[in-house]
Image (cartoon, helix red, strand yellow):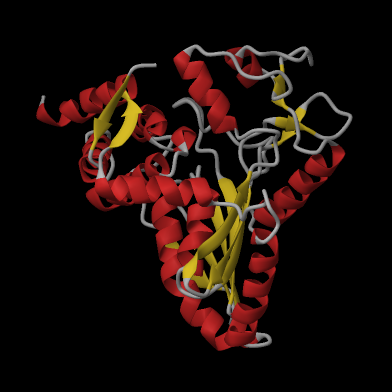
Length: 339
């Protein structure tokens, strides 16, 4: 892979231009561009620049409504439902994150359900934004079918990410972000784009045979993390993200990876908890600090997120390294606006 460097602000502006040139409103393009640029900064390449060609093609074809405005409905005192209207998920999450803290301050817990949604990128960033405001947060999402139920051969679950974040006194929030497949599908997408092999144990081909061919893996199914336990957790996510919100199950959703077919109609849930609504914010901060200290005192152990934070610090003082081919592709898409 050939790489090049670009300032984060310049990358964000380029992604926004590419999306605007692909039938996306300026406001939606800006929201998506912020999220994809942050993914690049954080080293989550499968959710960054690599998504621009697909997002642009989907907005051009109408599989994603680039001009959609998410709408919010208060279902109960502590719950809201957001209709993403087959648009990009990022503006809908911006809306939820702007509303949930005030609700949680009143009720102790607040939750948003998302329907007619799309790929929501780095799950951990959504919960981290709430933790930066002093809240604990949990989010789940289903994705188009990628994993079989345990013992089965037909893809019925998505990779179904789960993310959790908690505030820390005097330190950045703890963020835990994981796909329920052995590896996030985005990493296999990136490998397929680069023509690179994947490690054995990540996926099986359409015949159920283990494979190191990324394209064959995308045509087959992914291996659940932790075997039967991962498959059970994927079932839990389908229940929360879809049965609770009225969205499409993984086996009903169209692909996030191409511009053909109807909108995927994925579902998500985002939950925020105010520590003040439980034992108290200071008690939580004290107890969580004790847990973190115990982990960090164990030689070799570490809290999740150190790599992400190091990459962010580096990006503040320098350009970020990106795939030169993907950058050129984004530039070509953006150039449509000038032709």
